[in-house]
Image 1 (tube, chains in turn cyan, orange, green):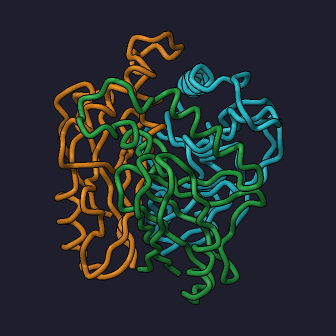
Image 2 (cartoon, chains in turn brown, orange, green):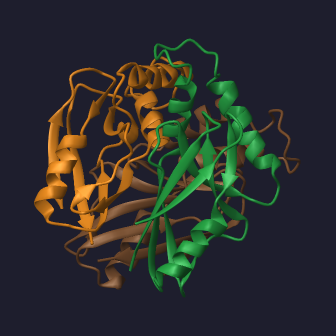
Length: 130
Length: 130
Length: 130
């Protein structure tokens, strides 16, 4: 298992991690298989979406905030209930195909860490299987 | 890696792809393992749900449209922001168990491509691991 | 493939299944690999979230109910359309890393069965790959 550690800088943001994952796949020597990507947190998630126009990630964050506002009425008293809910909606694990020694993503796809309760130091765990 | 290419016919629709995936699993010769299903797009997703009553998929599309309307206020200027958001909520990868050479789904389960910005030609990528 | 059978006791609830999954991983003898967890149903799902404060799961259920009410207007006539939709939003498959013979979860993470149309008897299917 490989680990990436990174620092987020806002309460809510999407950070692209595609090149970091590609590096790990290259170093793993896995030619054909699956790259499993996992976040060990409960207030951030993972998603795949467009990495060309940054307004796409802004729209996703904005709609999630409209549907699940930070300042809604929640029972959990730490002020980050919205972040827990958003993380379950985006999800904590992704599986991406490896072929020819590299990650197979669609033309417009990037892999994003979805921070919902930053700024924090976050980890991403990666395991490749052949 | 195997590929399925299919054409969607509406802006938003769920297309069942279960028989296509079952064919690929049968041809792969994988007796026991996992079937990874992946869409390389950013405005369509994948989900598992009931394939008996078509009103179930209509209800999912209808609720997503109420929550994330095509004509909402978004920054991304291509008119398909709702499709990007819906695809991240449904997700882009699925992992289904293979046993005895066939896909193990629940009695009422089917696998669906979720088109949110069609009609388009879409690909589905499949990789089985033993 | 291993199976867990459990009974839910309410229409909507999150049941923690982490210790059950950990037992299966230990018995499987898998030292390094991936644990695939799958629900073969269409009105319940799986998620990972905080298992320390039970108010987190209550908040997730409560927000999903606000956004997708049981008594909304749906076409599917069985009275459980909300449950089908919520299950697709949470998802039906999870992939968690195994290292050193045990499941690698974050400090605050637990694995939950998300019941949306109980009480029912539910199955969870588990397959580990090295």
